[in-house]
Length: 335
Image (cartoon, rainbow, N blue to C red; front, side):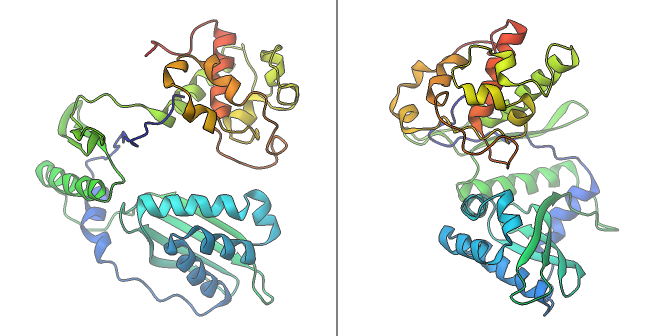
C-alpha cells in the first residue's frame, strides 16, 4: 500500500525447501545444452520472440509484438504494456534461454525456458495462423517449478547455504536484489544473511534486522482482509465501489467498478505514482485517505472488466473499503 523506496530496496521472502528438486536444479540447470529450434512456422516465431525478448529494448520488442500479434491477443494487453513488462523482466531476471522443446507442430510450439540471471523457469506456448505471414494467434508464458532430476544428490545444509549465498551475491552484483534472506527448517534458521545497501545515498549496508518497506507485498494482506469480510457476509465480490462508499466522488468508478475488478486489476483505475505524488513530501501520506486525491478524479483508462492493467490505486481503494466496512484503520500503526 505504501510507496516504494526511492532506492529500490527489495525484501524477498525465500520459500526454498530442503529438497532434491531445489538442489538438483541449482546444480545442473546451467549445464543444459539449448535445443535446436524447429524449422516450422511456430518454431521460427519462437526464435523471433526470443530475440525480441532478449534484446531488452522497448521499441524493438514493441514493434515485434505490434506487427506479429493478432488483434485478439493485443486486445487482452496492448504491445506497449507487454513490451514494458518484458524490458523490466529482462532487467531483473536476465535473458531467456530455451531448455527444451516440449511440443512442436507447424502451427504450435511449447518450450521450457529459463532466465539466465535468476534461473526462473517458465513454459511458453505459441500458436500461429496456418497461413502466411503466420501471425501469432495465442501466446502464454507460465511460471513453473523446476523438475526433479532423477538420482541427483541431496545437498547438505552447509552446501545449500553456500549455493544460496553465491546466488544472492550474484543478484546483488547485478543490482537486482538488495535485502535480507532467511531459510528455516523445522522452525529454526539454517541460513540468514543480508545483501546490498539499505541506503545508497549514505552507503549503509543492509543488516539482518534492517526494516524494509513491504511495497506491493501488502496487496496480499489487503486481498485476504477483503476475503475475510466477504466470508463474514459484510461484503460481496460483486459489490460496486458506490455501494460500499456512497460518497465516493468519482461517480463513474462508483457505479461501474466492483470489488472483483479491484482485486483482479481489471478496474481501469489510474495509478497514484504521479508527478504530484513525487513532488509532495511523503510525510503527507500517512493514511489511506491521504492517497485518494492523487487519483480519485481521474477518468477510467478502460471499461471495468475489459482488460487487465496492474493497479496500485485499485488496492489503495480496497484499503478504503476495508476501513469503511470494518470500522478499523487499515494500518496497524502509523509511521
